[in-house]
Structures are given as structure tokens and as C-alpha cells.
Length: 433
Image (cartoon, rainbow, N blue to C red; front, top):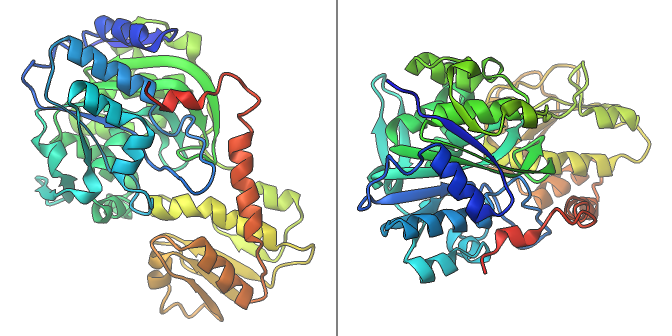
């Protein structure tokens, strides 16, 4: 069978560039005019309470708007935009959609807007008994156009098309994807696409992100669109542009083995720009000490008496989002003196070690996993899925570790303000006129 080509287009005008991208990869050829089409952007999170830089984190409204316009001009009428933002995001999908300008697409083109988190899910069983609860709106779509962001991921290395479909799951299944052993994250989420009619993937590379997938990573302007009717080939090219050959990305390797795909980029037709012209290593991971006692930044500051074990794949997305803020709180509690011999563990498989005076159990899973751990002298339970930052500060204060929540507020402002001086970073890219 002839492989679908992958297009790479340098963006000048988003609408015109997307038209070119779709023409090069013959992107609309798998769609029928009367299809029920679901457009799945990446809106992993949003925040109305604190400054939130969406650069390289959330699919730009420019790309979504251009896509809807092109589809409407080709006669497609049954269009839906659907996403399931993180369950711990306080704002509902409809409020986020309005902020992103999607309501204008509803008014102009009759696009339906669906928040998966408040809609129905259906349990889908795989041939080996594996089960996932997938949004009914995604299962009932006749075709899905997947519109992820060109970004890295601290657990999966890259977060592109295949990973973006995790947003179609309910909270329980999202958590289940962060299992252990055969249910490891890099084995589970690549299976979601097997049950969904993805006809086209368009990677929004207007911005890219190192140390993703959230706003604590650093964004760069990239101005690329990558598209294909072949989801795997599109991700393979996207990973290469981020600097990672497919055989170094475990979830792509797992998918290729299950479906008989080649991992060699040379086996796929790439049209438009060359991969080599835009390929640049984009760091996916945070620096950690060799002895697994915390971020390298903590060591540079001279922080001692504290061992924060590095997160693993069993740490689900909710707790992952709070992990970096938790580090900020610990950093704010450092007053030049050693911490009182404290260890921090997280996720579904980390066990507190012997020899520590206090054991911080970050998140519900770590609390449950360590409830009978005889190594623990003094447990500090940070319950929650994920734990609330205010509660974290309160619990640490009870044990003599006084955190400054305002340090986290300052950090959030820093994340946002660092892009203000660069005119290439435009918040208007997430609005629709």
C-alpha cells in the first residue's frame, strides 16, 4: 500500500500555509463532505487566575481557525471541536473555548463545541482485555482531524499526534495510562488511536517547547506546519524536527512494532521543507542529580538534607502539573540551613527509603503505596489528585518547613513575563478576530 506523504511548510500567512500543507500531503482526500468531523486540538491546561503563557503548550487559535475556514470552503458542514482539558483545571471547557475565540467559529460556521469532561464516555475493550473510557463524541465521529502542538514531554520525550489523543479519555483512564510494567505510559497511550478514526494529523509548530508539556518549559518560535494522513509518519517527522530519531522515542517504537511500521525516516515521503533544515535538539527533560536527590538547580543553591526523587512515568498528568510548583515551594523553604533529613516520593511505584527523618508522600497514589512502609519514621501525607498547593505549604509548615507561596506567584509571573520582550511571541495567536 502506498504510504501517505508528510508535508512540512514554513509558515508566513497561517491560512495560506495550511492550504499549501494540505495540498502537499493530499490531506483532505480521506474526508467526505457529509462526514461528522471532530477537530481535536491540544488544550492540556488553561488558567484565568494567574498569568498563563500558552506558547508551545496549547494549539494556536490561528491554526484551528484556518482549518475550520478551509473545511467550510470545501463544503464540510458537520464540524465539532472537542477536547478534555485536565480535570483539575478549574475553568470548564466552554469558558476556555470562549477565551480561545472558538465561539466565533461557532457563530460563523456552525461548529459545535464539546467539552469531553462533561459529556459521556464509553468503555472500549481491546483484544487483550485492556480497557479505556473514551469520549463518546470521539468514538461517534466519522473522521478525526488531530491538531497537536510541536512540543517535548518530560515523560514521553515528545508530545505530538498520538499523545494528543490522551485528551479523549476520562480522568480514570488518563490515570490508568500512567501504570507500571505492561501498563506503563509509553505502552498504553499509543493504543488510544487504534480505536479512533483519525484521518488527518496537523502538527501546529508555530511555537515549539522544550521541557514540556506545560508552561514551565521554554518556548521558541518555529513557524512550521507538519501534516499527513498517516498519524505515525507525521509524528516520526515531528520527533525528528525536535531532534529525536524515532528509535529513541519509546512510544513510537512500541506503536511501530504493533502495526508493522518502519522506524526509518527515509522510508517515508516528505514534501515541502526538508527535515534537516529545521531539525534542532529540543531538550525534553529536567536536569536531576546523579544520586537522585533533586533538581540540579537545588544542588547549585547548596540545598542539603532533602532528597526529592525524580518523577517517573507512573506520575499522572494532574500531579505532574503540580510537581514543578511543589519544587518552587520547597525552594522557597530553604533559608540557608539543611532540611531536616527529608525524602519526597511520588507516583504509583516509588517507595520511601530507610534513613530519613521525614517522608513526604506527594499525591494520593504515593500515600496509598506507602501506607504500610516500615521505612517511614514520620510520614507527611500530601493527599490529593493532585495535591493543592496551599495544602502542601500548610503541611510542610507543620513540620518546620516554612514555604513562601508568593514565591510561586512570582515564578508564574516570570514564566509569563519572559516572553514580553520578544515581539515574535504574540498572545493574539490564541484569539480569533
